[in-house]
Image 1 (cartoon, rainbow over the protein chains, first blue to last red):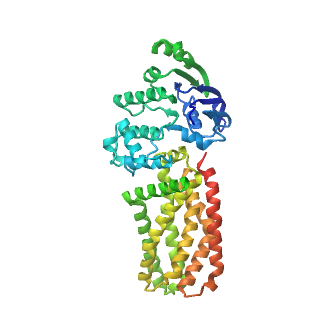
Image 2 (image 1 turned 60 degrees about the vertical axis):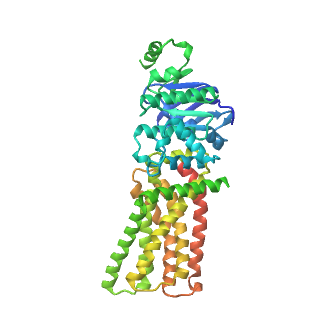
Image 3 (image 1 turned 60 degrees about the horizontal axis):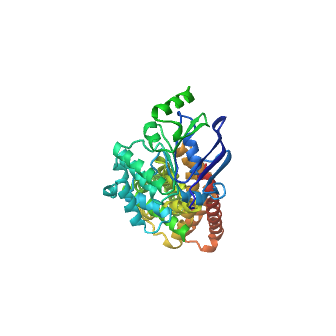
Length: 236
Length: 223
């Protein structure tokens, strides 16, 4: 799947009587970084989980690279890398065993080389033999980023990726996302760290109560203060 | 081949995690041994013929300690969201089921391999390893398959430790009846013809439940 475009059309999701998403529609083009922002309960995590195939929508359509998720779930999964609130790592395995396991699930060739490569890139190469439970929260988050990059996904979905990262690791994540942009990958991430998130994104989608209330290209706000003015108006 | 590689990856992951901690296996083995010892005291007091009821004792030990292992099977996957990590990857859900079921089969078999000789020693009998072992293996296949499926269901509930036995025991009744009667037949030296009906029931149970669990697993693990 070479085309990394994310297409979301009229997406609805209901949990019991509560609407988590109502008519959410947007696109992310290849080589574009889009930030999802909004207050708690706005539907950001639900939206990312639905695109990542972890949760099913009640209605609407999602396509990755033109392939509808409903009909091509496996192809979509192969094209997606997702970082969620949890690490998805096995505590009792070493960092290397975890990465090797996921590399094998993605049926990657040259597993050892690829594991070394991504571990090097996120700065955990010297901790590969450590049992995951002994790694700090920040190192586990780095390991999660290594898992994200393992299969070189065309689409990167990240839910609060800066959580638990120190400044050096957060800067490294910025570089990873900017590199993905240069390589033509589509990046969609949610964040409450507006200063950092807005600095690297091309567009910001503001969500509230399950709806997209603003879809703003970077040109529409001059600086963080300008964005905060718009954002405060939405939250009011 | 890709399917098989993914099944093997899941089995090796489970074995590597268990070999590092040995938490699951040690709990299963100790529990099975405790059951044997307790039953051994109880039956000696009553002077009961062990070849008549020993099969029941064995299968109580197998199933109760097996449930300990099965309960952890998906609980461990849920703790850090690892199952979601697996579900995110382009893996056939059937491969996940087969991998987990095979791991559970191996763990239960190891527990049985320790329990069975101790049962023989405690009761001073020389069990006929053939056909006893094939009967137990056949029973374990069905138990691991159904247990894996129901463990995945129970892991999604708040009371997963309680839910698994409540779900598993009723579904396992035909398997346990067949397993107990086949084991009893073996301990009493009866011919295969005498227990062929139970063997067929156990075989049919295995085929039906492995196939059904394989197909419905996708709906169980996906929201």
